[in-house]
Image (tube, rainbow, N blue to C red):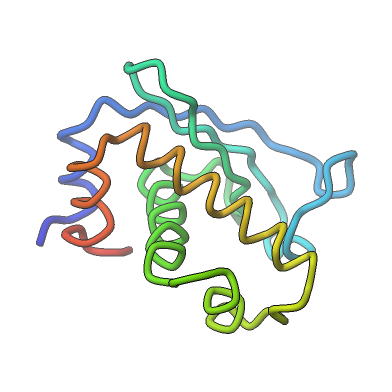
Length: 134
């Protein structure tokens, strides 16, 4: 099994992050921020596919690419292992009848699909199932 740093060394991924105001105009989907700084981070490649965008909390400044990639990979693994929305909701501690939970699930599913397109099938599978989590 390879490390996340080894995975990144063999990729053409880049990242842009900018700090966002958690009290600003774009509410967070899940909860109030757990960290004093929130960053909207975008992972992109050279293949022209849609970038993968997520919001990451940080105590000390912009996150490292490995932290952001690990977060979206962990989300993708949870989405991929759930057979349906209801199973995902129960596993994540959401009420399966909640519209809010369904919005979160759709956002995670969308990000998962974008990650697969960004990396390609083989690299995506390698990231999720053959790379150590942080």
